[in-house]
Length: 393
Image 1 (cartoon, rainbow, N blue to C red):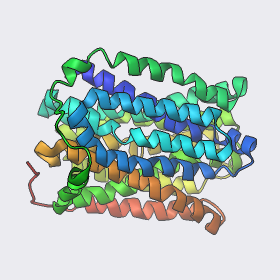
Image 2: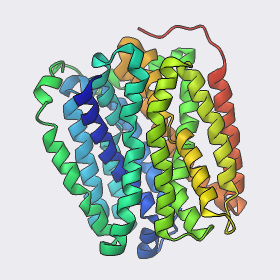
Image 3: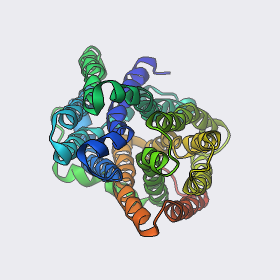
Image 4: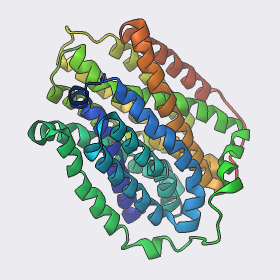
């Protein structure tokens, strides 16, 4: 097990994701302060992922030229810029600039981590290690959901964002310690832009890449919808207070954190990665239907139970997903992970705004989540379809 690279990349992913999830967590307070609808947060999150698509496609060249460690430091720098711009900026413009700043670096997190981990990871535990690394995503959400609401009540939403700067900057400096050793394979002559920008898309000639990418797009979009709209839905429809809504969001993220290594073990030992991901799609469909039925009469325990199911499925798939991209990519694993990140982010960019608009069209959440459930089931069926093609490389 590559313990130290795993811990380092896990920490980077955690703090970067906490910065991203901070805005959905404090969305009700932002809406009150800036006099904007809470559903605007969906568009802001989508913007971060939209910009992240570009950084994901550029990241393979950056990683190979400057090294995985230097690239993760750039991710942390982008997170710090996001927190500063959101906290000190003016109105919606400041929020928009903040998510753009984060997106510039956030897309490089997974390709850089994969580049550092894959050469040091034995194949029998590959899905497990990659899933452990992806714990940083829900864990970052847990930290945002549990830490920020009390801070918002004490020092306001702007002050709560500024408190996140301390661990982000500290980790960015600590990553300099192993940089020379871990980045020994960097190639200073490598080109970052130009033709290399489009190399990940060449992988889509492989049918299994296409099927995986369709499912990744749907799964990522649905996962982001659950996160981006959960706090607003629970406070406005179910009438929970901000602390209770934050606890539900934390339950979702905790379930995602715990389930990811379990899913990785399942993909290594019991099922194929594609079969494991298909099970996720079925679970997403079930929890989507239930989430659409939320109303003032729903007990907190039932909402918590559904949040746990959603966390284990919509919040637990990415470790196996990234591992499958890296496996199918073979010797082009960094480019494959860049492609996977771009697809995941494309789902995060495209689906939440459409989902938010559909809520207004349907006059509620039920119809939107029903459509999401159908898409999740279709993706699961696509992944379960047998194929005989071999991985690249």
